[in-house]
Image (tube, rainbow, N blue to C red; front, side, top):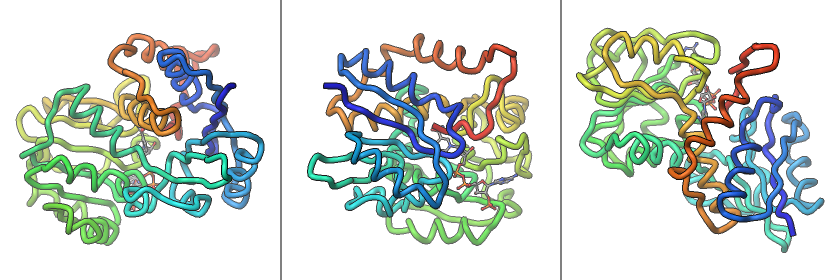
Length: 291
Ligand code: NDP
């Protein structure tokens, strides 16, 4: 029997999740199919229900539905409940649906395991306070940084996010204009959508400690503006493709009970990425390519 999965988003045509999960199926010798499904906010919950009613075993959820997705679930993992965000739904044969968030585990696996950058004892900055930032605060604190500072264009959202997770570790929140006083940082994670628009938040020159890692959750064929800015200042840089792959591996593990060994497959995963970004007409579309 083939287990059927899909990723639901809007827009969704450029999602790399189908080829990534098909490769995982091959690596783990599981028979799966994985498609893309587009819907609107008004039809999201119904779309999830229909997928299950038609035999689906699970789905991924991407922009802009992650914060709406808890409504489509009967139960949530504790992490998803605290984050208020679901990117993976497991569909049981009894008709129930359980929501999980794998974004935090994906980010940690990419920074800690793939890039060998331990977070423990480091000063970490999280730029942004939207859905992606919210999903990673608790996992980041679980990695025991010396300090986690959250900053955002809208300061009140950064402050509220830090307050919500204050019992999990040393986290503070403030507006971008107060960053100079907090700098420098060893690891800076850009969880804003600014790179999608080719924009750079107003960052002080003092931001990066020597040897810092600047990690942009957005991924693109070349450097994002944030990566280019950090590279010019001597930082080690990375984009969010590794996070995308690792969060997908976590989701696959939830559905199929086996986590694909991503370290065995990087060459093929990079092929997936290259094929997707080398459009036949040479046009490269990074817009909203989040899952
Ligand atoms: P949201 O819309 O929920 O949040 C957007 C955030 O970006 C807010 O903090 C917003 O600030 C900020 N922002 C938007 N535009 C600008 C700008 N021009 N300058 C400064 N700040 C800005 O989006 P998500 O949190 O869901 O996604 C954020 C990014 O993370 C996206 O690029 C997405 O593709 C990426 N992502 C990647 C994943 C991966 O696996 N690699 C997984 C999940 C997300 P404000 O509050 O002031 O509006």
